[in-house]
Amino acid sequence: MAPVVESRKLVCTRSRGPLPPSGVCFLLASSLWLLTSGFWLLTSAFCLRAAGWRYQLMEVKPHVFVWVPEDIHDQQSDPDYDRSGTAGFIITDEGVVVVNTTNNPFHAREILYEIRARTDQSVKFVINTDARPDHFLGNEVFADLGATLVSTAEAQASYLDSAMRAIHPTLPTKTFQGEWTLAVGGREIRLNTVNAAPSPGTAVVYIPDAKVLYLGNLYENGMIPRLDSTAFKAWIEFLRQVEGWDVDVYVPGHGPPADKREFSEFRRFLEFLSSRPDAHPPEPAPHPKARPS
Ligand SMILES: [Zn+2]
Image 1 (cartoon, protein in one colour):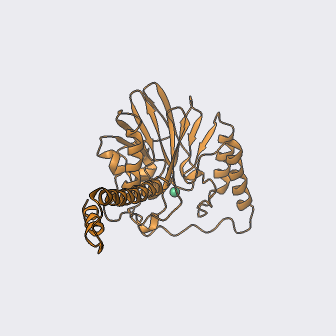
Image 2 (tube, protein in one colour):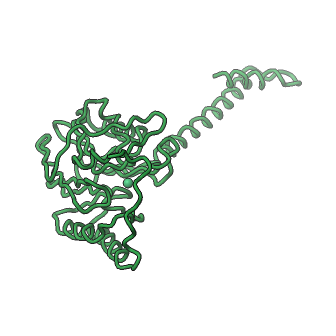
Image 3 (cartoon, rainbow, N blue to C red):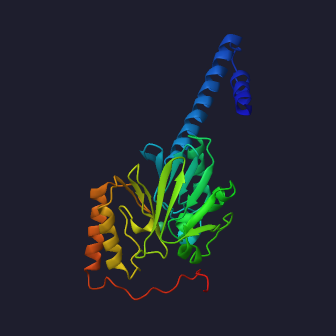
């Protein structure tokens, strides 16, 4: 309010002519106040809108959501993992299940905000599809709420140390191997380990009644996938298999969700890459942050 008081003084005291009638003075002050308020409201609205555009939330099937970030470099995340992965959540009558938690707690809180806007149910489980920090560094937000963090045993053993200010890497506490089915609120959530994947111990998350499949790093929609895998052939074979599953929505590790046609295009793109003479690079050097085994 301080600027408004100043404005009123300016209008009413700097006039060298006869003082305007008090009604005119009040009108001028009110107009200025309205203009000032309008400016701040417009500025605030623009900021809120700009902030909202940093991610999209899509309800791809009833109570099944996908969170898609803008493809930007996050200044507040680890420099090696400053581009967030796609994530999602499933709301049931007995709790919420989150799939991946992005590359930092700030984005994870955005997901939590979207959950809280829709339900008071607690977050029961968080599933990490693999051990890459751009998909799990928001875990701490949900661990603080008492959620059980889940991944394959192989993924848990290969998590990379990755951190920046205000980030506390929080590893899964519940592991599985092969297949595991979660039953939450009458909803079945099937986890399947994929042996041929760009990240060790990758799992896919299948919601059969919704026909939604979260694929993590096995699928990048509209982006170039990591090509340091030597398992192209088996990776492509797995993608070919899931094209035959009863799935309507394929949720990638990066980019927006896709239908079967778009998903098939990605598999064909990998086939094209694998057909090139330089498609099988030597085994990549271990990541500098990898823990000694
Ligand atoms: Zn990723």
